[in-house]
Length: 227
Image (cartoon, rainbow, N blue to C red; front, side, top):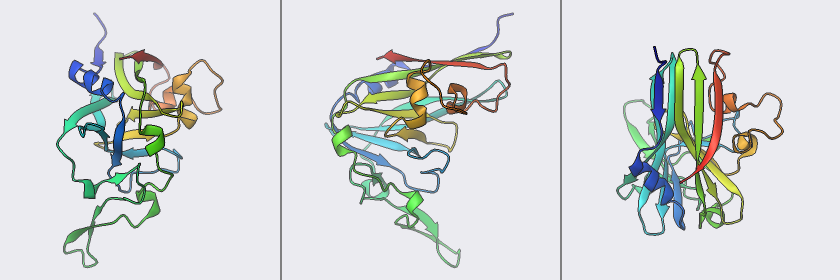
């Protein structure tokens, strides 16, 4: 009997959207909130992302999660978006625009939209307008996995060539819901770009892709593919 196989590669329409990101960007938006930053991933941001291309087309970047083999697999998801409610989003291009979050009133009887008061709920780094104002090559980060239960292939993320010659990454994640992981600089995740390079203690491709708690018989590899 053939072992089960799960295919989570990008559909053609989403591949075209991914390729269309190789263009000047007008803005990169995020949804502020308690899951935006994590002390475990310094310099990484988990959020629903919206790319505003220079032609004013908005592309939403999140993750698609699929239960499989006693756990969850995921891929990056891209979809065209009507003009987003800009006031609700924060901006990586204009950090002073921090967006709004929905919070309960002090009597817990109702709620209201207000600015994200906690620093970890908003982006406080330098503007990324110069780096992402013109995105060059866009490549797909493809994950291949195999275990005793079956195998899978998933387009986990995009690697973006920035205007300064460096790279940014966007990865699909299993949690929180409706989010993707944005890495302005690869940092520890550089192991995904060069899996055969020198590794840092405790950092493996398996761990970075969220499979660290799976059985030891799971084998995971990655490759970069042109669009």
